[in-house]
Image 1 (cartoon, chains in turn yellow, red):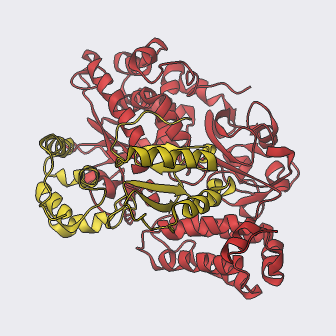
Image 2 (cartoon, one colour; image 1 turned 120 degrees about the vertical axis):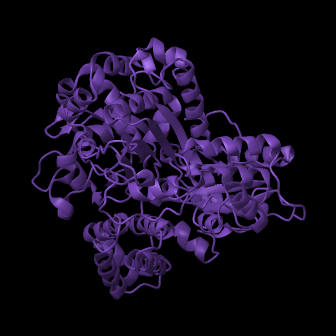
Image 3 (cartoon, rainbow over the protein chains, first blue to last red; image 1 turned 135 degrees about the horizontal axis):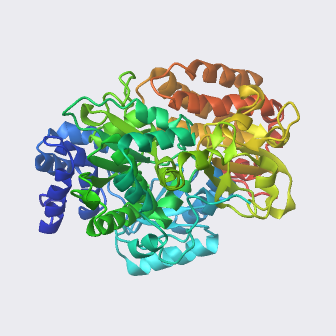
Length: 179
Length: 447
């Protein structure tokens, strides 16, 4: 990103509104919610420039943003694909075949965990328990939980995502999952 | 047949909307509390009910509320812990997604008792779409006069906000949650002071789990005494159980505490038995942190009595032969399951989720993961099994927050009850049961 990050006016207005949810002088509490907005608006990751911009909005030191962004696993400090495939790997999902799902996607897209396809469409990641153990195995892509996965279902999903070609973010407004 | 106090209407179409929720007698507890009760009498009902924290610790809720400091002129807060991240647990997500107004109603009634002008629902970042459902429900509650200034003309005013997290199991620990709410890294605080004295922004704060707060609704509607008559002994009321793993009917079940474990696993009303007609090998009864138990000890206590789904019965025998009800995350494993591999997924989890403040946890969880990986890779030795035992014992009790214990207990229990399986892995690596893992590791095709 060469151009300086700047929120769209409506996002900036939302950020300012979020900052008013806390007691007087405690607006730093809005940091994590605003980082989510920033990650969604600025290509799915938090560049140093983006984090500095968020620090300026909150009127806090940049280090206060860096230390938080680096602590939470949902914040990407490097670029990721438009569809960040996050597959749960903990106990129940493992019991129900999550490793097969990961191996299948890895083979199909020819990327290993942590890698992005050359076209910038997909990044593959395994994550810890997503709270979807009864509908395991599960994959989160942006705001959506894809549950009770089978390899066929995965193939279909990847096709759909690829043909849509759009970035999926946690902040997307989506319908409820299939539980 | 267990009664349903929380999930009575979970399958009513449109129950996630205000109109339908209200038709089903929604917000009655707020009406009752604000019109005919005082903050003190609400607290009395909660005490009488015997309700215990549903997040995992099982601490009496009324007692926790009674610790809240009330210095004049200082704001007090109620913070709902919706960070649900304990592996095996998904009940809060179900409840919030299906019946968001039940949580909001419980928050208002509880806040009235606690004298909290503002409350926050801290929800894990992965549940972003659930946060949007809650935001919408809160808007509806404002629009219908259940939130805002002077609710029902009672003089009680209340504002409620949803606070989103960003992926950190540790934020389910209440002081880490408060740090995160303040826009910081989720590092647990040293206690004392407890949140009841100095919580959010240094003000007195009560942090309660989603299910705990929701349970306040039937307690106020039906009375604490009626609630206390459900269940068994000091395990009163109903509990949401998240059932997963090798069972025919995974899902969220509301049970009367005291239901026999055997009935829960095998009855068609609940888990419906083991998938594919296989045999039960082990159960993790209360989320990943609690000790795993082999089939014979989860169905019956060491004394030979039927094991019940209650705080006391699951705890019977201590950690030698018992476990904990915990969060109610009930993971069932059949006879094909590798206990060593399952433990590896837990050890990897705790290593990933350790906040890094305390050396025993930061370093120890990493060691345990690596040793288990080595054993699964076929390079383990008998000394490694003893080393695992040694490490877990040196984490337990030596950290600021309970993540240390949560990481140590599963390791201790797996070795305690399944030592032979660990020894088989290290003395006879060809026998490694999880062939898929073994073959993948070596890029071989299974025969």
